[in-house]
Image 1: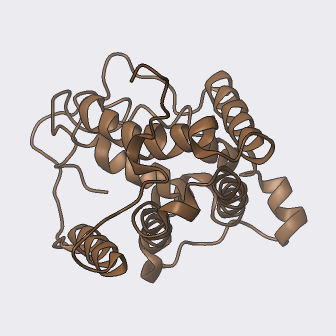
Image 2: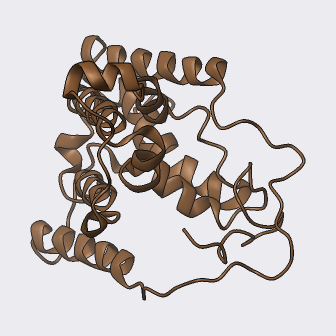
Image 3: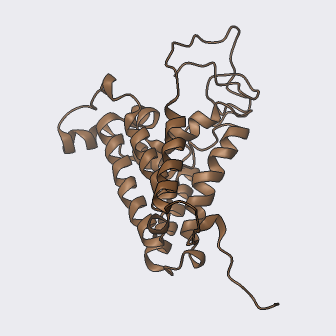
Length: 240
């Protein structure tokens, strides 16, 4: 009874015993969760009356030191996922990504505000390649305009894919090697987005983590340089 046992958090590798076929249960749950994100009414939002504040503790949107630390952490996690143990419970990558990044960070943004722009490695990559000289050499022209019809759909599609990995293909998507390769692919996508459209536009519309955490951050107390008031829900009345 006192022998050590292996405990798996967040149902990684767990077995299911349900009264209905598992695929119906998982697909139904995923459909409900995804539909809940689409139940949004589009409307024009005017700025709130009175002045807004960026907080006295405003920090510039890009700090090289924090950005570098974020990139180092991403590289370490990718290395761990590729070269480390492929047992989910024994590798740091599944826990860091699926529990900390995917669940913990959005919740913290919903409480504190969006504190992530300076440590988000995908945002840092987009900023690093957002250079006119590099863009001129690689694509032979200036940054492309973001098509109006594209809206937030790139971020929405990527969010759907990641959520599907968590909810539907959990046993496969949470494997360290799969998560690591997915992060490499997404890092390349983020760099390409920053190169083609410019970092500011890409991070506002296309980079999934920036869009997700900024949305949660509207609920949080501090603004971290974004428009709004220092209070809970202080950013929800600000137009995008």
